[in-house]
Image 1 (cartoon, helix red, strand yellow):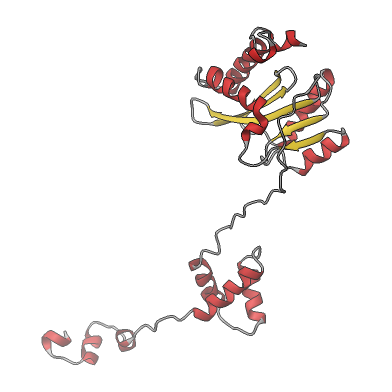
Image 2 (cartoon, one colour):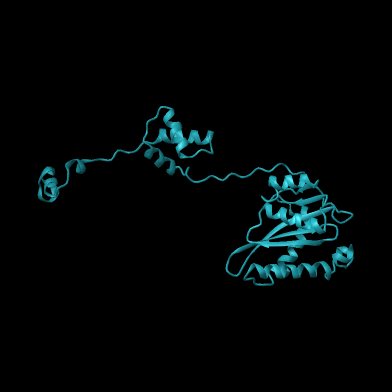
Length: 256
């Protein structure tokens, strides 16, 4: 209206019922440099605190910014996304693959995973005796936390006894304090392989390869019951009928 009809801005605003302050408003660029600096300093010093802890710490430092402004900057910096930190493992000493001289000297434990027909993932917990390569147990479920592992070991203790040493990798189930305390109570030493060196746990890794090729890749499973049934059938054949070259071409049960 101003450019085409030559009327004043006041008359044009009055005609369309638009306040002149709205028409003449010019947004000021937001300078959040100081807010960014304060938040970054707090996060570097206190990485575990959340927004409100950060906000009230800033207020105590003498800044009176509105919490909405601080939160806008907080989200722009992606500080509201939970940060994941890599869990640092203690240094693992390189150990040669110990060859036990009798049963129940060393057990090896490892996990595997696969999917059912409907897309749900399930896990396998494999426990073998390194002396005769016997598969002591295959536990399968959608989730197998540390407490489930301990329950399986308690079950094996009833008829098999317990080993002097258990060889494992650095998975979260194995580095749990619960498993450490349980092993300490039963005088079992936990032998951790070096990260990225699976062949330091070669006996169970070889067994995992056979399970993958002959069981998991050979069948399509629709339920966990099918997995458990086939896994137990395969375990019995592996222990009682399958000849092992490393054992002089006899099954693990015969080798004892």
